[in-house]
Amino acid sequence: MTEQPYLEDATVREFEATVERTVSDDRVVLDRTHFYPEGGGQPADRGTITDSDGREWAVVDVQKHDGIHHYLEPGEGVEADDLPAAGSTVTGVLDWERRYSHMRYHTAQHLLSALLLEEYDAETTGNQVRAHKATLDCAYERFHDDDLELIADRMNELVDQGRPVTWSVLDRETAEAELDPERTRLSLLPDSITEVRIVEVGPDPASDDDEPFDRTACAGTHVANTEEIGAVTVTGRETKGSEEERITFELA
Image 1 (tube, one colour):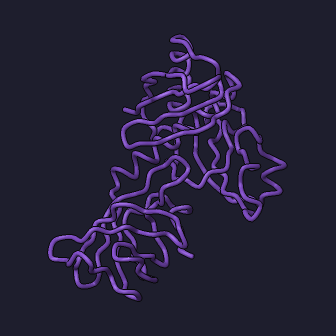
Image 2 (cartoon, rainbow, N blue to C red):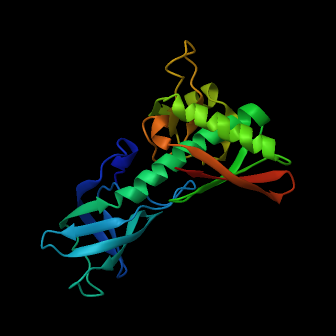
Image 3 (cartoon, helix red, strand yellow):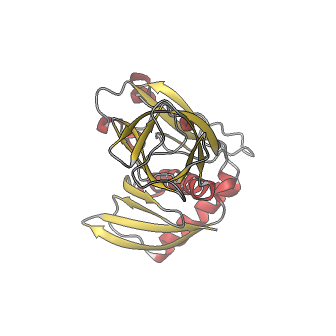
């Protein structure tokens, strides 16, 4: 199984790994990777893989199958059906601008989910991060212009407070006992998952309150402080069905 060190340190931009095997004529599985595979509303990373001979492939997609599959397109001078050899050492380099944008948006989505639950009792039902915008679906009848204005104001307050963002691992039984089930939705996870990664948005450093703003299960990548998110603009809403709304937002 491919090691996923990005779960411990999401800031690594370049790394070395060993090719475990090739798949078909366009994919490789590495023994470890910092490329994030698509999941949880967060798109896959992009970047490059280079072997010891200097041959380069573009990483055009990353997906979880039986291991993490890196979909490759050959660079200049590399044959179309050629891949890094199994057992060889390669260097992976992330498209950092894309990854960091996803980290900012994903962290902002955590703030928005917790805020909507707190202010409107609206549970998140889905989300989708992009490099330049994000959407969040929630169980709510209808937001109005004054609601969107309040949401944007509160989001920017949370960002400006510079709340720390941390992550840790809890055994599932402890997580189910300690965390808000409306936020974690641990009941949706397969029974085979016995440990869960918890992302926490901490308290306001300027306040005496030591309660975190949000704690939820998530295997995505995030910034280390809400200040990194930047200014939030709520750009619109739309109805997605009976008592379900979609909010779209962008970051400066």
